Amino acid sequence: MGFWIGMNYICIFHDWKYSPCKCRDCGKTRVKKHKWDGCKCSQCNTIRNEQHDWDGCKCIRCGRVRDKQHKWDGCKCSQCNTIRNEQHNWGSLQCKRCGQGVPCPICGRTMSIINVIDEREGKITVGYCDTCKKTSRP
Image (cartoon, rainbow, N blue to C red; front, side, top):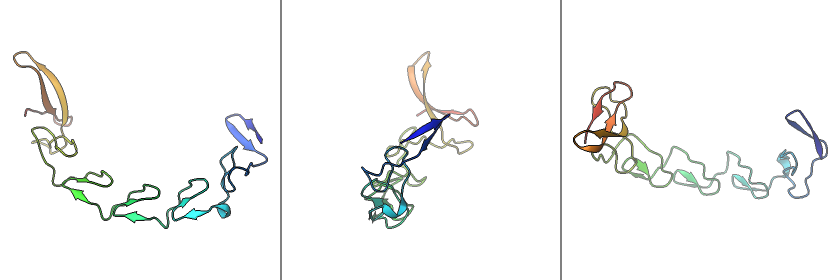
């Protein structure tokens, strides 16, 4: 139970009836009342950054990703979908695994993929570098 002062809610009597660790009205948590199941409280789903249950790079309890033990399929981790800038499978204008555009042949930055209308060929897809304004055709 509480009241509003401007945009702030002031909780006077916390309601712990539905969860002993989290007030139903204001969301305040009582740290000592959590029931931890590894990194996640089984009562209110609060996450702490300890006791994760790692399956390679991803915690199976909370979904947090760490930058260790990825299962790389070329440029993309098959568990967490993290992309690295190595081992791309380049098609004509983008990687077939992750969809990243090809690097610009002039400056090396990733090219955007855009559709343009060509008077002779109709609608075509080209790579476009926002940095050096270079276009690249497949």
